[in-house]
Image (cartoon, rainbow, N blue to C red; front, side, top):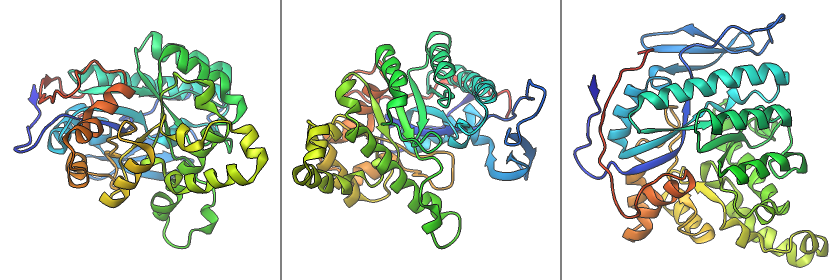
Length: 361
C-alpha cells in the first residue's frame, strides 16, 4: 500500500477538470480487418511507453498516464484533492469507422473506470463516445452513466470538421442535459495548421486556442445553451480565443440584422453560463477571463500528465486572484458544481488515502 505525499504548504483542495489518461496497453481489434489507425503501445525508455498510431510514434508517455498511485503522488504536490480523467484527445477516434471507434472507446472508458476505482475517491471518470455515429454515441453515453456512473464526458472541439454547435449533435446534448452529464470540450485537430510556421509543438501553443475559441463561439451562435439551459459545458485552455472574440461578436450582432435575428440573447450573457478551465499560464490573462466570464465560470485545468501543463495550478490562481471567495470558487467550488461532486462550499480538503497500487505500475 502507498500513501500519497502531502505538500508541506498550502491546500490540497483543488479540483482539476482537465487531465488525461492513456491505458498501459490497447486491446486487439475484434474484427476481420485491423483499422490502419488502431492504436498500440510499444516499449520506450525506463517507465515510458510509445503510443503508436498508423505505424508511427504519436506520443511517448510515462507511467503517470495510467498509474493512479503515481498520479495521486503528483496531485498532492500540485495542491489537488480530485482530478477528472479524460482520454487523451487523439483517442476520441472520430475518424475511425464507427464500430471500430465504439470498440476502442468502450475499452478506454473501462480502463478509466478501473483507475477511478483504484483511486480511493481521488479520481473522477470522464468518458468518451463515438460522436460520428449518433446511435452508438447515445448507447455509450447510457453505458457511461448507467454502468460506470460517470458524471462527465469529453468531446473534441470538432467532430470530423463539424463544431459542437452544429445541429446534428443536438440529440447528444439533449441526452447530456437530461442525464445531468457535464461536457468538457477539448481542442482536437485544429483548423488552420497550415498557417503555423515552425516546429509541430506550435499546434499546442497556437493551434489549440484558436480551435477552442471557434468551438465555443459555435455554442453561442447556435443558441445551444439557450435551448438546453440545464447543460453544463466547459472549454479547455481558458476557452481559447473566445474572450477576445466576444466584443467583436457583440458588435457584429448590433451591425448585422441576421445575427440579431438568429442570436436573440447576447453572446456575452450566454458565455457567462458556460465553464472554462484556467490553463492560460498568465495572471493578467486569467483576470481577463474573470472579467469576461465571471467568477462562477472558471475552474482548474492542468493538462496533466503532458509536458505542456501547469504543475502548480492552485499557486497560479493564488498569484492572480486576491479575493478569498473568488479563489475558493476557482480552486474548488466551480469544478465541484460542474462535476456534480458532493463537496460543501468553502471547505478545503486534505485527502491522502491509502490506495492499491496500479495493476500496471
